[in-house]
Length: 254
Image (cartoon, rainbow, N blue to C red; front, top):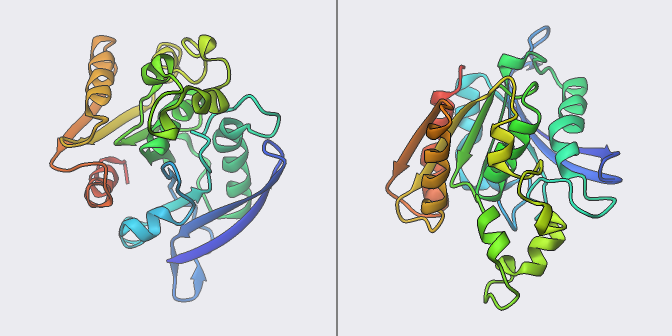
């Protein structure tokens, strides 16, 4: 297994972005002529491209599954195209990064071999970009997803947590009045996606995001969207994600 540190210039973001990649290899290096199934794996808020490596055993399990894993730095962007001219993270994650890594690494370009997943903020990024770019990603994985649209709409600037204040949501999403029905709305995107990716959700029973995840699960069922949903012992912690990323990999068509 090769562990690669890559710096890629992004036209969408107008700067260099750091990416960590796990790519199957043998003792002689990358395997000639082989194209690998690929998981684009997104970190959470305050995180970076190393989080999944330091917090879980993803490298070992990717090696066992012969799976390439691409882990980009997403800053605190929620992986959406923000209001600023240099904040086009959705364009970067859903289109540009896929094109760049396929050109650089031995990755399959087949729809059925390309997946996206993430934890917390990365879970939000995975569902909105997996649906927005539904002709690219065949499977979407949400671990403790920060499904926060309703929270953003009801937010004020009196919140004790800076990440929950209205001005933070405006910085990330822009005009909150336009959020519902937009390409940042995981409910609206479900109603537009064609083809419909397969969806996996996992959430801890002690996680504060549990009600929002249960609500979205019920929304999917009400609209007859196939979904694999799991609740398990745990909170918003690496112990939970270390366990359930294994469940995610077992669910993927590897």
